[in-house]
Amino acid sequence: MACPITVTKFVGTVSLGLLTGLSYSTASITIPSLRLLPTAPDATRALREVKRRTRKHALQLSNLTNGCILFAYCLSSKRRKHPYLIWMVLTSSIGSFGMDFLFNRSKGFVGWAQMVVEDLGVPALAGKKKATTKKEDDLVVVEPASEVNGETVEQEMEQERKLQRARAWLSGLALAMGIVGLWGDGA
Image (cartoon, rainbow, N blue to C red):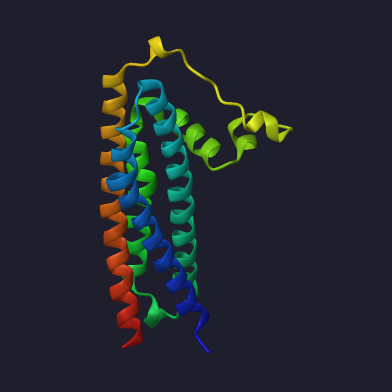
């Protein structure tokens, strides 16, 4: 039977792989596809939704990774507490939370934190009441076409693409550390 510590390391590494794949596919497939939308308002709505969902899943995967790896580190004996576990957590956190804040620093820390809490689906922490019916969640606010500038949307897409590339590189680095570390644990 597998050791629970090894299993948590494996789960953390797999979720880190999913995070890397999410960021890579968003940067190389999803965002370039949004450029093909016919109007700027459509592209703005689609980009906003992609950003929200990507942030939500990236932060959830990062939290899962960090929780599993820190759990494994805390339960390990002194001789099995490898520093690569701490480096994985740091790299994963910087890739997810750090990069997200860096690319959204214009909102300030409080604005960014509220945005993250709302995207993670905890509106009570953001100071907002949860919608009482499903119909209220499905409402879409349509902006007038005159307020949306195509060049601004293009710049937002490029900034989001850079964010996803940076996140993919950092989470890929943490994934490589995890794979080498698991390989070393098995030897």
